[in-house]
Image (cartoon, rainbow, N blue to C red; front, side, top):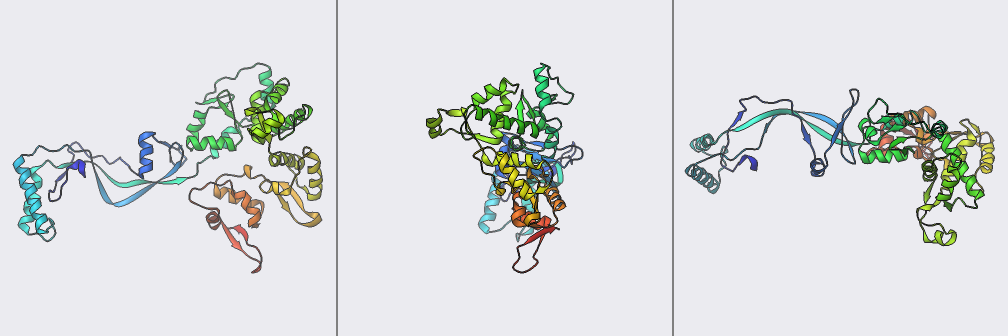
Length: 423
């Protein structure tokens, strides 16, 4: 209002711009936080011809919904204060003051002559020029990043043994046709241009997918290759007298580099299956300190050997347990609790069978994930279903809300646990 110099008791006339009124503008409804983000950092609108457009900030993704209104919205630009005579201003202001004193609001209960004088005063100033009109605005709703395309891009050509041979032969990769893509993978900027996610969300997704950056390009790593490298790390550590809870990364890198494994791959393997240790107590006991000290995660290592034992097939639970205990490294204790989101057990008693069913391989979209879950098993108890819902990200919606939307609950008897099936 201040840009139009509006004051109580001083009406203004409006007029459509003589050069024409635009109707192609869209209003965007934002809160103060998002407004500052737009002003300071900018935003990007993403979406292909077949996609629903999203607005992306530095750390969030928003769906864009066009909301129609029955009211015509008049859009005006900043107005300069009109040149008015002091006498005209004084008269108008005096009249407005008189109205305030009398307790009258122009147009509401005032006399016809008074109203006429107020409206006539509008002609003393240039009319407010309407430059555009709109009958709709865009509403933003925060949503989870749409990462379906990312998985496809990363797994087009995962890093594996063939890449080791190529590098051993000294062959160089060449730039591909697509922007941001090379024969060795995609740059971060290339992925950001093709995936409907913010930079912060994309980085988190790359970590979740176990992707590796090599030479400025991001690649997924073949699980079989990475698992074989893990086993080689364990073997090398044992030969060098290191335990899984106190590994010296530099020594492992040097030992495996002589066998053709890139240092970046060895360190990536450690980051996938373990974490760095920087405690003073470990340094005191082993002499390893800083970023050179790593500790393997027992659960992640045991999960690797569980999938290796199952080999993609269903097997008797008793046979699996025996083979699994024999496969894991000495000192590690496998437990079925480790496989809550990695495998399914069907049946009970001596005939119970276990099969691989990792949650990481399920779709990220809630609807598609529930479809995959109910396609694998028609009825789920909550204790079995819960681990497979942890990977779903829907801002503002809890797991219970998703259950109400995509599943229905039932009970065989009043004291029986709830069972969920497809809605």
